[in-house]
Image 1: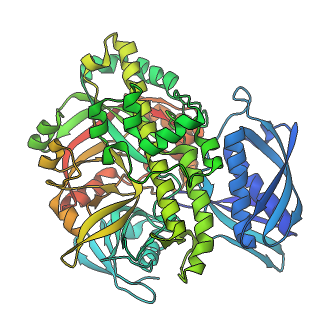
Image 2: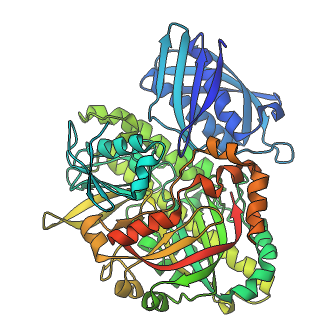
Image 3: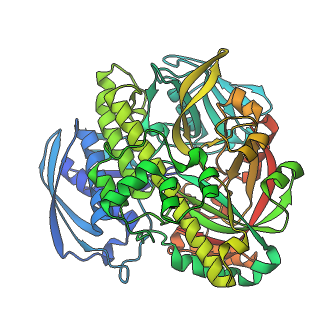
Length: 139
Length: 478
């Protein structure tokens, strides 16, 4: 598969491996993985779009900061996201349009919580088959 | 791979190599070496030993398992004057901890009404991602709560003087400040005071099954057949965001202070630096949030018992035995090479276990040593232990914190469905309620090490001594 993600077992936490032809695609896949741990993506409608801006010291830290920003927006604003589109990305900043809807406990069966993306074994690199990232989430 | 040498029945040493400043010292049952992820966990013990200012050894308790940065079950003490503090040595769930309340009720009073009680607690205390806690706070009130902790709840009639005295650090960390707490942390946590959260957090209705130390149990008012309530939760989104924000800032600062790290999750800064001081003040605020969170939930537990039994909670004798933190950094004085030294003791999945005579303990525990509360896995037993002199000498007054995971969440879910786990527990007479059935599968008993094995090692090496065993009647999961 050219673009996608998988969840990887880690004793106390959950690892996410994401891959895509572009770094933007990897950021988008990793975000999908985070929300797949919170709620069944098939139950999330696309009724509202927000712009998200994130800065960090370097590109792999930017990946962790991006996921942490989404976790914050979800918990503080009670919004579930299902579609992610990076419109700008360099080593230290990104801009994205994220689409989803307000959490509705009567329709959204919550699978679990995600506390944060950690920096342990965090990686983002380009290989012969495209871009790949690994990040461990504290759940 | 690190080189591990067995030096006692339950003791292992990792000799200093490379950048390690001190050895690693692991208390463990030999079954550790069959556990998945044990090599990574031991590597993490060695990694922590590289942190500037660390004294004596990088320690691991018998419930050690692979974490991120620090191993879970890790204890490390850094000199306060020239050592570092590390948010990864506390974790995202700052002051995740556990409290045990005892009651004047007996097994036979409660068992017929266990289902009704668990239902009442479920109605009163939000779980999972339903995070609208019972305490609605204005931003200014949240500032007071996190700066002053449980004593602020005393003024609001949500705690008693005894509750304050029976909480580690009297439920109020020195130096707590809302200043270095970000607006994001406030937004995440504002509505969550008095909510359980998800993951391994729970409220359990328990019965004291066996007393192993009559004198200590007697002094604490613990007896066989007595009903108790255990609350396991932390600082919710407020603490998670506080760790995230300060970890990011510290990851940048670490390089500036010329500190080389084997793992970026160990990001750290000198305790006395602006980054270190801000983290410590924000961490203390998040720790107060967690103490208050567990206090407000216990208040709701009291009201739930009142509702079911039709009597005031005071007459039902629902009193806090103790509340302990197991993810925290504390400024403590311990002897290092015979000299009393101020240290930042990081406990990442480890419980303070002060022995008799410690001045920080209230009078009843100054006689006996402090209660060390060890929650077991869902549906099995939990333990009450007492801190010892030996813990003061060997482990900076620390012991284990729980059973420790054996299977990953994914692996646990492949063994049995959540509905089946619930049926198995109910067949044992345990009432189980949760918002999420998949969570029940992730938290199934077989996903954890046998808590008895962990407690046996702690007791055998003398870091804490067994006082009583408790088994569950009802479980409310996140």
